[in-house]
Amino acid sequence: MRCLLVLLINSAAFVQPSPADTLRVLDDDTAALHARFELIDSAQWRIDCACFELRADDVSHAILAHLWMAARSGVEVRLIVDAYGNHISSS
Image (cartoon, rainbow, N blue to C red; front, side):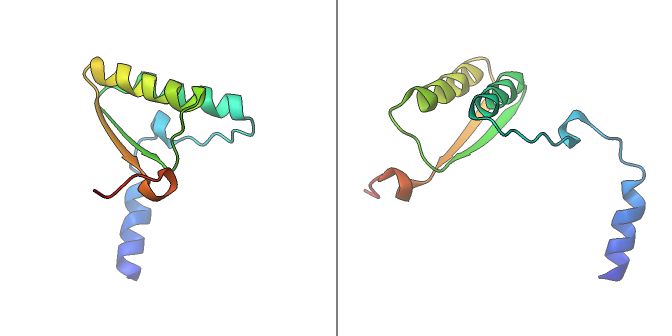
């Protein structure tokens, strides 16, 4: 275990940072929604999205619309929706 940790620490020195290595704290619902739109709209190859709840509301429809447009532009979109919270039947 110790050898693995040393290897990871040593190799981290050679890893080039990327824009994906950033953290943004979003303390506003609108800012969080727009950040999601930016991420979806900037995707080039694939989007992996997990939703715990989708509703028949403007926010869910807007997110699904952005995902749909990404898919139409050639981006692979994989969407996981929690069946329990959304009352999706198993049959």
